[in-house]
Image (cartoon, rainbow, N blue to C red):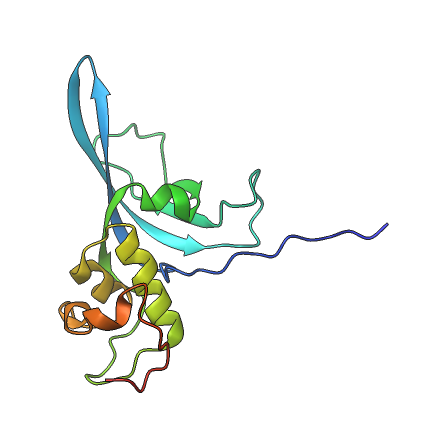
Length: 155
């Protein structure tokens, strides 16, 4: 009997190593508050997990005022579909800044398209892939879903 292994998904959003701030609404007794947490994203396709899709491990920093017995970061496994449903902003990137006029790789173009679809701000995407904050807006035509050329030499 042949064992068929599922193909591991790629980090299409290029979030590995980025420090992000995640926000989500929490409703208690008819009062809605926006909860915010800061954490570092790790892309771990080979990690042990119950669900195949959970390829991101986010190390959330502990909030001030938590009990003294709680030590270290909170580790949460998640997937892109769940993360893109939240509001998040990249605070720091693990990608080194690129010089001006550096061509976009096909992986960067795909990552920008995926992250724009999820509603992430252009400044946050620019920081996340090592570009200037306004770089995404200046090249907006290239990231439209119907824009065919993935080559990096087009103007």
